[in-house]
Amino acid sequence: MMKVDAVVLAGAPNNGQLQEVDPAKWEAAIAIHGKPMVSYVVEAVQNAEHVDKIVVVGPVEIKDALPPGVTFVRSGSSLPENIFLALDQLEKKRKILLITSDIPMVHAEALDDFVERCAELPGDVYYPLISREATEQMYPESQRTYFTLKEGCFTGGNVLLVSPQALINSRWVMDDVFSQRKKPWKLVRMLGLVFILKFLAKRLSMGELEKRASSILGYKGVFIITPYPELGTDVDKPSDLELVRKALAPIQGKEA
Image (cartoon, rainbow, N blue to C red):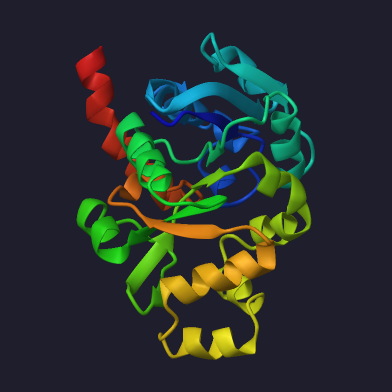
């Protein structure tokens, strides 16, 4: 059975639209039924069979909310810096599952399924794609940014499985990709003119995109179509928070 280490990225300040509806200083600390958002993600990661060591990188304010068995690292000033702070805590012998702390509806089954799909294909960087149909069927009120490929209409997930070597050696490109990750158009611009034209014509295939991404990164990139919209249903605006509070409420009721 493939084992991976996990890094939960929880260092984002609450300085976007969410600060209008929640006073928490950090996104990871936004409360959902009395629990910080990061707790839901950490629980899912802890319950995943394929995950071994877990590092959470975030502000000291969330440290007390973390369960035993998790390594905490204080976050720095940028997402790539946080990834490398977490990386220092790992042996770097296994692939690393990077996961943002703003997908509280994620669960162990979705994470294990993603890792299993990745294990079937050779690669260095694996990125989940979720079809528009799957997302709208499960969360009809969710507003996502979609892009169209030859194979269909997709949104990207908030997890990434990556080999430690690829992370270490592609830091320069990672800075760009992470800063533009919510803007598919800006990412497509990195591909070059021929790819831009094909993308606009909705004729760019996953295979072509993988090849091009691999040549830019210098490592083999693989797209994984996942049936679990939870991997991409992030909380970055008030309507998202309302959606997850509604979706997670009955679970809390049963446990109480």
